[in-house]
Length: 120
Image 1: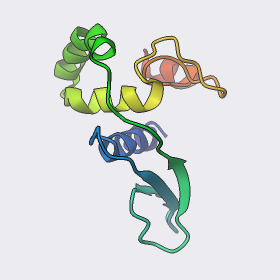
Image 2: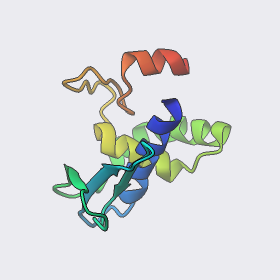
Image 3: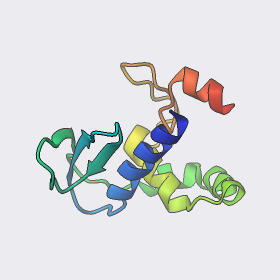
């Protein structure tokens, strides 16, 4: 489950790295139970899972507020800081106090159970 969640979040982040374009995201689950995400629906049965609206640009004041933390974590875990910023932008728009309707919290919008499992 953790691996699926990570792959899903990374897929969404990679699809949203271009900060000037807009895209819709489509997904489907294949016969083996693997969930696929794309911005170009190429397989019958793909469903719209997220419609992106507005600019994806990150305001510099929001970005620089967390720059040191992002850079340290990225270096420690070997993850590109641009990818981390893309996930944060997508999940919370750099609002550390963000809480979703489902209870996901923080910059990366983790569910409390997932945060506990990951030790964060």
